[in-house]
Length: 170
Image 1 (tube, rainbow, N blue to C red):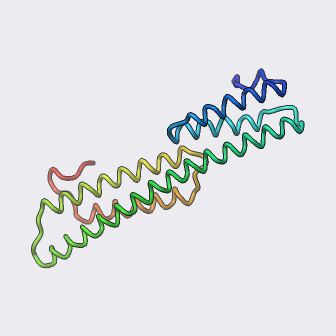
Image 2: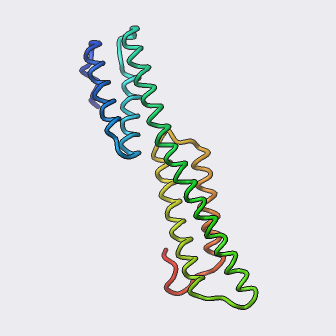
């Protein structure tokens, strides 16, 4: 399959291509675009020839750029996970309060339904974050594992209440 690098042969060709990719990386406004630019930079390093000091210096710039882009995307995912974790903690406190009320025989079905709706939303967010982490090769396995545990805990919590008519979205 033809590549954007197939016709490059001189230092000037490679330097111009690197400048083009770095400009795309600089203009990237979301993690998908950053990861796309990082993949292009990694391919640049893999395909650049000849192995001369000049090309090696371009390769180091490309590798540094790819690493920075992956790190930025990973940090964004971690920030999102922190935010969701705080939201899960708040929902857990709400559910604990509902449980205490239930133990006293005072349960408001609306509050239980609202809490389950929020838990369902968190499950969907965790699934989305997990898909995003899996799609980005720069993400760590530890992040995917943590997201999986979060998703399992939320699903277990949701199932403890059982279905309430009209309140749970599958």
